[in-house]
Amino acid sequence: MAHVITKACIDVKDGACVLCCPVDCIYEGERTLYIHPDECIDCGVCVSACPTQAIYEDLRLPAELAHFAAINREFFDIGISGLGSPGGADARRVPCDHPRIAQEVPNARPVE
Image (cartoon, rainbow, N blue to C red; front, side):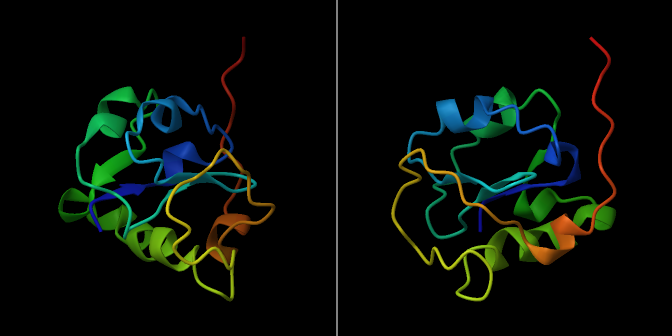
C-alpha cells in the first residue's frame, strides 16, 4: 500500500484527490473515499490536493490513524464492497462503506 485515506475525509469527500489521481485508484463509498492499495503508484499527488489533510503515506500514518491502512485495504474485499481489483475507478460510486467507517461518529461540516 502506498497512500491511505483517513478520518478527516469521513462525511467530507471533497474529491480533489480523485480528480488529480493519474491512475484512478481512489474510490467513493457512502461516507468516505478509499485508495486501492494495489492500484496506487505512490506518486503523492493526492496528498497535496487533499484540503482536509486526510491522506498519508502508509509508512507515515500517525499511530492513532494506523487502523485506516487496514480499512482502505479491506474495503475492496468480497465481504465489503466486492470490488476486488477493478483496475480504475471509472467514476462509479460504491453504495457501502467499511463497517468501521459506518460506525464512526459523523464529522462536523464547516458552517458556510
